[in-house]
Image (cartoon, rainbow, N blue to C red; front, side, top):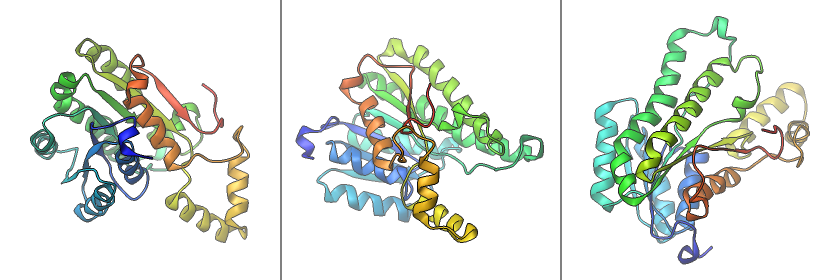
Length: 263
């Protein structure tokens, strides 16, 4: 796609949780749609790798190693972003913690606290820091949630607790920030097909004496489209919500799961 024709042409997008999976895809897709990006995560090397991909597309990228659970670190991110670009159009809160994968009754409370601190308060911390520049640009916030909102499977309790709190915060922020012209929406992915999930499926295939294709087909069978969404599918939904095409959409959660769950 020509960046000149992109949905985010000449906009500035801040993305947290930039790793090898969805975070990287979000950054690259935003650049393909014409945006400059500010990349935030704890690991500098990973940020710089993604920044190189973005600049290869002809867009600017600023990598800012950030711990979004730390007030000073998060404030530094906001300061650098505004100083480098002079404006911020979209904040994508993508950071999350690995689920405990235990029943709630056996999940360590500190793990739950840490999950909420990163997933919920981290997103809230960044949203508060970027409220003024987002208000100036009549911008948007996109929070990356999860299909865990739609089910109550065993061992996902602490993850669902954090993601449900993130959804509640998103809805409240949409009401509170709406008068400033700021839209706040969420994307709830299903399984995300990419290198990370493939690695997990390879582990499962070896464990159960199956092939990766068989694991994929078994997993995708629960969806209407009989496939799993890719990281590009998720990123495109976030870009839509950040774009002028969604100018009248706020307080909503867009499920991207190929029809595995209906809401």
